[in-house]
Amino acid sequence: SVPFAVLEQTLKETAGARAAVETGRCVVHWFRTDLRMDDNTALSAASTLAAAKTAAGEDCSVIGLFVISPQDYEAHLMSPARMDFMLRSLKKLKKNLQKLEIPIWVETVEKRRDVVGRVLELVEKWGGKHVFANMEYEVDELRRDEKLILQGIERGISVELRQDTCVVPPGTLFSQASGKPYSVYTPWFKTWLKYLRENPYLLDLPAAPSANPRSTATTFADLFCQPSPTNPLPLSEELRETQLTLFPAGSRAAHQRLQHFITQHLPTYHKNRNNLTSNPPTSVLSPHLSTGTISARTCISHAYLANKNSLTSDPPNGPSVWISELAWRDFYRHILVSSPWVCMNKPFKPHFASIPWPHSPRKSAALLDAWITGQTGFPLVDAAMRQLAAQCWIPNRMRMVVASFLAKDMMVDWRLGEQYFMRTLVDADFASNSGGWGWASGTGADAQPWFRIFNPQRQMCEWDPKEEYVRRWVPELGRLDQGQIVSGKGLQGEKARRRLKYPEECVVHGDARKKAAEIYKTGLEKG
Ligand code: FAD
Image 1 (cartoon, rainbow, N blue to C red):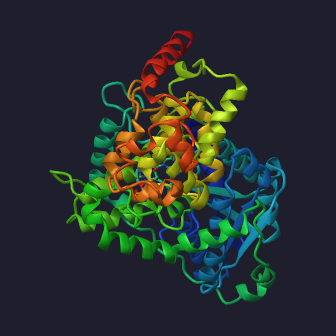
Image 2: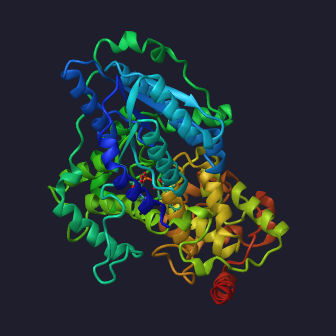
Image 3: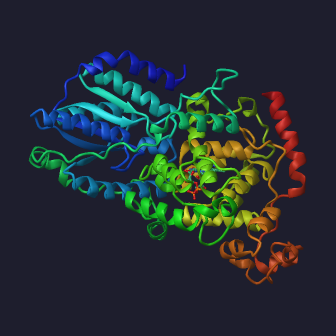
């Protein structure tokens, strides 16, 4: 059974019982990956319900709830940088909500199996009868929400879920030819555009929540004075400082970044987005989109306006290409819903589950270590991996290059790279990460075929021709004359590398295609 379909069915079957629940003295909004006050579908609905009861003469407050679940973080490989970004965003959200007298309570629940029970307990304790939340699409989260609805009904609590994180909700687009969900991006994107044109309300922003009644300050006084939680995941002081500087958290910072991107980079995004310049030509909104301090709906609405009220253009321009990139985020969430096995450490194309990775576990571990520490001997790969370790973020082009390199040049199981990304990225997002790794390794939805292998040297010539990026992140190459890195001349021979204290190439790129062909074909036969 597909967990999303099961949840939809449960929602249908419990609709009557949920509608019969009368509004209590508060309505709870469970914040998850939607850490913003404005343009938040479920929060807006929670506020409307509470305001209606207050207008009818009985004060009803909105209460925010956020759950910290260490066991969930372990299971989902939560990265310390993302956790830090989330907690910083939560602090900002708390301040914003307080302006409307809305408290937000942060509850730490050690065991994931206790989360649902504890949430319902809190709702009861506060005298609430409704919990609102925006849906999450990973299998564990869908199952958790099903449990929440059913246990809620038993306790007289109505659970109201909204679709908010995608612009076009998962479960809506099906191929006309087969009636099945899409697995290829281009036809999916055409249908996505058509659906959005036919349902333009999907770009309308939900109403902002209204202020709580004055009585909230006294009725729920203890909820307003909770100290901020500390990060349960260790993050070095140095990394924390870098994160603070590079990724200011919260909705305000997200909107400032969006405005800066729209004026400075959006018009040329289609031409420049892969360039490895020190000032990124892309939005760098991914930490915000992953944490929900800004919505994809807001981003696309702005690009739509910048494109004179159009989602596309011919030829493609900056806004239309940015919209199509944001659509990839929707696409990978649609894939999670239609192919839930990707949440279970399995490739989208199940026949690639049995690729016979050629190395012993020891060799594999050594190669993985060289990749993680940026010691592969390939300047572009090393530059990107060192940037990732230092900043917890790298550009899309670099994610594609290093992922392809691990899977197809080093021939290390790509799932180890996928896990490292989850544990490291500040914007770690299960759907996009699993989709990106599937694409780069040739095992995912609409993936790059296994026989297309990025040449790291050529990628460097194309996207970093002035060697700015590699020189910044691999400073030991600084002694080489300009042009000697992209031409490869400065790194020829063992002696040259030893002099620079830069490692030998850990694999022979020229052999990769042949070897990848062998293992992928065997994998196919076995699968
Ligand atoms: P922009 O170019 O400004 O794009 C705007 C937004 O669109 C992004 O913030 C992102 O939300 C979305 N987007 C753009 N490209 C993609 C894409 N190819 N797939 C999905 N969404 C996209 N993105 C994550 O948010 N989290 C991840 O964990 C993640 N892991 C990845 C792993 C691999 C191997 C690959 C190849 C890609 C991964 N991506 C991931 C997608 C993409 O690399 C980042 O979203 C992008 O680099 C973020 O930079 P930006 O905000 O400046 O993007």
